[in-house]
Amino acid sequence: MRPPYLLLDIDGVLIPFPDEHGSTPATHTRHDVVPTGRSADNPVTVWCNPDHGRLLMDVIRTGLVTPVWCTSWRQDATTLIGPLLGLPMLPCVDLPRPQITTSHPNGYLGKRDHVDAWLGDAPAVWIDDDFTGLDHEWAVERTAKGTATLLIQPDPHLGLQPEHLTEVTRWVAQLRTARAA
Ligand SMILES: [Mg+2]
Image 1 (tube, helix red, strand yellow):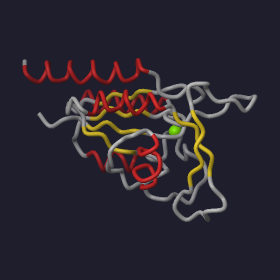
Image 2 (cartoon, rainbow, N blue to C red):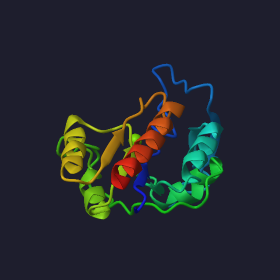
Image 3 (cartoon, rainbow, N blue to C red):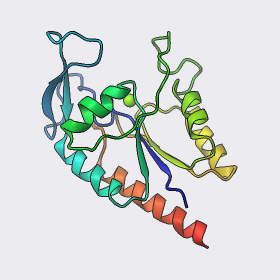
Image 4 (tube, rainbow, N blue to C red):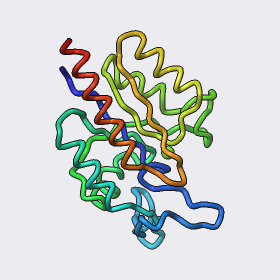
């Protein structure tokens, strides 16, 4: 069986949003990075949890998923954020650059149409903090049509938790058992 894709968002997942007091979880450490197209004297501060690299590698090393970045960081996910977590160079879904500033132009995640086309009929587990009810319906319908699809939605202020990756591992194992049956 072809391993399902593991689509990974960054903002709100690996980089949590600050709470109302401007604080980030104590587990995260500060880094200044310079995204593509930005001048070196104007870096962006990001907060990453070094444990996330280890936890993701535990899943990636099983070979049971094909990890892919799916984030507005685009190629910078591979070159800037991944290395902060000790991750190897992972491919990224080449998302279009929308002319709009909302992430839900039609009531669902704006990048979903592109991801849907990109995936074709490949099974996928997708971790993103920003799904709406329509995205969850999309996943249910996709699964019902025979393309296993799991959405995992961390709290954007907390980001990725170990149990989210446990859920990934459990889902993939169950999928393999179902296919083998
Ligand atoms: Mg996000």
